[in-house]
Image 1 (cartoon, rainbow, N blue to C red):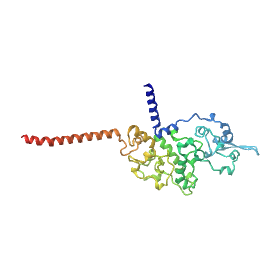
Image 2 (tube, one colour):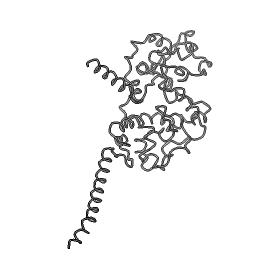
Image 3 (cartoon, rainbow, N blue to C red):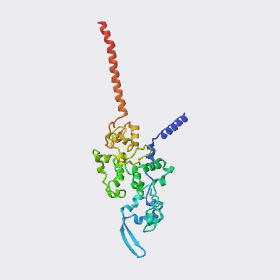
Image 4 (cartoon, rainbow, N blue to C red):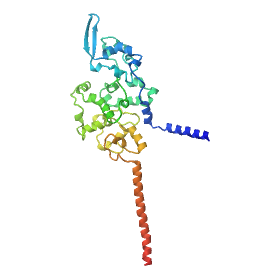
Amino acid sequence: MMTLKRYLLCFSLIIVTSSFPVFAQLEEADSLPAPRGAELSLFADENELNCLRCHGQMVYTLTDSLAGMTRKQLMSEHNLVVPEMFYNSVHWSFSCLDCHSEGFKTFPHSIEARFETSWGCIDCHGNDPNYAQYRFEEIDAEYQKSVHYTATEGLITCWNCHDPHYYNPLARQTKGGREYILRSNEMCLRCHSNAEVMGLINDENVEIVLPKHEWLPDVDRHLEAVRCIDCHTRMNDSVLVAHEVMPADSAVRGCADCHSQNSILMGTLYKYAAMESRDEKGFVNGVILRNDSYVIGANRSKFISFTGLLIIGMTLAIALMHTFFRIIIKPKQHINE
């Protein structure tokens, strides 16, 4: 009997563990990383010698060995790498020269080195079974169809949004909710609210992003509660974050597209949390309520709906029974009289 119980227990455990939804597996994959830091890096000394002694600080010393002269210079913020942040990023264990060519070991850096093509995400992570769950190949295919790629002939790359020196998934950096949304939108606003940065792509005068959204009621609340990409990308259920950014005239503009039970937000920003919420609590759009977003029918509960239908059904049944007996009993009383 004990053997049978053990068999049933093992069988139950197999069934339960094999039925975990996709978002649970991704949550496990995005759990806190192993300890990081310069003291654990095999290349910390090499990185300091070749790169970070200059690029790791705002003020560096420029030396002319032939003339025997030295001068202090300010490092451009665009060329600065904060060592503490780099050694806490996902690429913390790499040598700088794993991604940058040997040409950068010579100073001043040659023009050839400055114009070298940077590695992209797909160059390292593509077709790698260790990263298959993140679908880098599909993300790259989406990106190449996006307006970021097509309108700039590939000038905008992964690294314009995801700095390779500091990158960490937002899920690890935030607790979700408004913080996650604001941090996500910061990626877009770094360029789209800065006319000087946009000038690298477009020679025309570029307005900041906010006036473009004046058609929205209560613009500020929308930008606080929704990611830019929720309205400006094409939905994709197979990747965590959609990367096919659409032209502005193709963005979502209909209120009902978001403020409805089967909303776009449920398929983008809240897709995995919504799956969990529906499974556990029966809410159709319950997750959105936690973010103070108004959605028609968002507080619908399976239990309340069933209870309501049961009460209505019982009421109708009682009314029908009452009518039935009134019809039968009344004629009998008339005959007796």
